[in-house]
Length: 294
Ligand SMILES: CC(C)(COP(=O)(O)OP(=O)(O)OC[C@H]1O[C@@H](n2cnc3c(N)ncnc32)[C@H](O)[C@@H]1OP(=O)(O)O)[C@@H](O)C(=O)NCCC(=O)NCCS
Figure 1 (cartoon, helix red, strand yellow):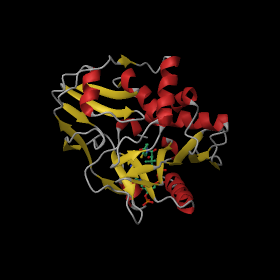
Figure 2 (cartoon, protein in one colour; figure 1 turned 90 degrees about the vertical axis):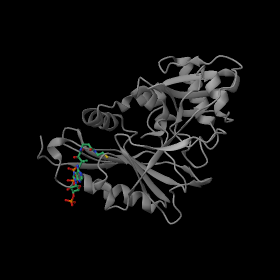
Figure 3 (cartoon, helix red, strand yellow; figure 1 turned 45 degrees about the horizontal axis):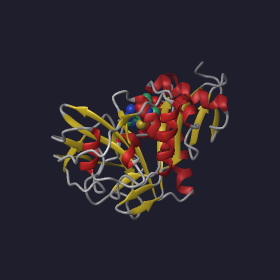
Figure 4 (cartoon, helix red, strand yellow; figure 1 turned 180 degrees about the horizontal axis):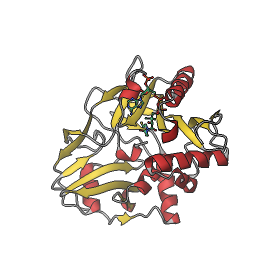
């Protein structure tokens, strides 16, 4: 049905039927199942969805804002993140998304968020709302691994004990970088770990640290380091049992005691920021950890 009356709803995550209708929209549009968040304590508590529903209760259009505190050059920035933007094909081209963007950005402005941030493959949608594409850089170099004090252990997100360990450390972690990082996005990390089966999660008991990593083209790629006290990169690489020949961090390595060379990073989406008066675009090269993708 495409011509019946539509009903606007916002902030409906507590309503199970509406949340599952949003999950259907996102599964049909992006092939991503956000109902998996149930296992991780439900959706991000600050999430504020704006949506149109049809008479059958189908969510036909949605755009969500949420609180996404950042660290940028050592300063904590109260930013709003935007995600889950989709309109069902039979409802496109009627201005529904334009309407939801205005509502979501207006909601964030009224609450005094200092900046906005989103990931998209359609940057033109957001330029007129003040968002700018910001380049991202990974960091590449060599590392001489330190001898491991103990072995690392692979974690499985499907194992309840491993999941509890991850959730506990994610909640009490220190910031990944002082140059640019999102702060404590537990559900986002866990959902990303589910979505990409190539991501490996290793626990290093001697450091009480979880490393999210991949090996691709002979390169060890570090995606995130979840810990209360950041170890240096040589200790991490040694504990993972890697020879350290070629290492890349997909986040600024300023807390790892190492200077990788910045190399331009291009993924399927670009990072867009709507800067406030004081930023928040860091002065030096940076990228958003893939475990913080939203
Ligand atoms: C992109 C999408 C959300 C647009 O929804 P929509 O309801 O058709 O958009 P609207 O009709 O409200 O259009 C709003 C404006 O965006 C423009 N627009 C629409 N689709 C666009 C696209 N793919 N790229 C750039 N601009 C686009 C429209 O021309 C319109 O501009 P106007 O106000 O000057 O006329 C929808 O096509 C969709 O769900 N696509 C698949 C999922 C997706 O890409 N989501 C966005 C992820 S960031």
